[in-house]
Image (tube, rainbow, N blue to C red; front, side, top):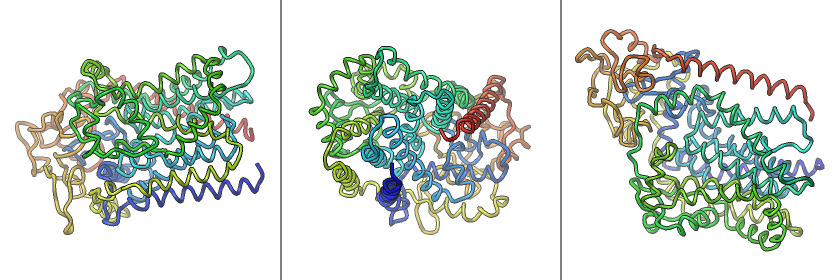
Length: 596
């Protein structure tokens, strides 16, 4: 690529990222009313709690926190808010700014990863790769999840980059292959530490689908049968690396899950198989249905409203037009490729069918899904349609590569239509979101330069609504800013309505944490949620009267003294040693093969 074209590519990339900021960040972080998506209540509060723990005791991992639920899980919880980029940024800058930087960073990584996988692994030209990168950047799933506050899904944008690292280099350099596999393992481990089971399932199926598409598109000479399974070996190795690095988290999650049942929510589905088949086409290329007029009639067996952000997936109608053109123009080549690579074709079809079948509702099928461990805790499978987005983008890029004339104008026209779609649709659902981050941001600004003055938790509270400087607020985990730990809190494992909050009735609201009754203080010992046997207690038990000093340290954010079982100590050690060895390996191989 000439220097002039390289400069043009950098300029175009800068423009497209600026458009992303103007389209999604500037209007909603916050809105003109000073509000944000409702689920930022969780991410901004968690990041601020992490800030408190870091500055109170930077060398102590905050496995648990006194800030909410009268004693809650933190790093030891099902999700790990302390191990993510937004949290690390919040150690030094306010959580709202950190959130915006985090979103732009991962949006940029999604753009870069898609460009690299298209350009260097699928061997497309720069224009086609830029088109694919732009379409993936503007996908509705990531953008509107971030707007609404589902920041646990930010790792979704790493999928193309992981795919790029896992597809073998054509030069066959074993050292660089090993480096790439280890790097992919680190990224997958990051997803395990920061995301939900849904994200892990989505990532895995996306990567399998990407590898299958690459096999189908590979027209290099040689025996196809010998290459059918080879692409999945790097993926297997990367998953092994990721499991070793995140072993401490896996054992924590399994320990906690064994003490809770979160199977009390029904699993919604679509009334008929035709809807399950056609809905993703509509979501990817056309409009998002409205709850009042359509969605509630499409789905059945739901308990919660399936709001608009749950259905945002779009990559734009022009993408569909390009794919249809390719299917018509190159149908003979496509048929030849599927015959040549039968296994890859079967794998791809399986990946494409799974989200459809998992969203179809039939009483017997639904009962079976609720008996499968990974699905029985789900409350909505429609999110799995996000699997299609990277696969569709790759399909569009391969299809566009067949276009021979007016390529640059067509590329920019498709991108312009995709961006314009986000501006032209009614986005009032997002601009009407009511979460006001004022309490958290003022707390952060007040104590950023003097964290030693952050007040300890002195009392419990049970508030759902409160006022602050004349504004009304919905309250969950924010009460720690006033030195109180709210019983009416949020933790996914307790259920959306705290249905599984154990022994909640033992807590006295609006009372001192040191208030005693029947030999116990008015505060939960959260170690009992995760390691009850090792700590000789039950989930939901309180600090006992003889644990006054431990409680005093805990509510002052100085950590919790608890007994860690042997298997968790081993897991922690394996994770740490594995991470150090992998980082050493990546650095060593990068230096050894520098310039390749």
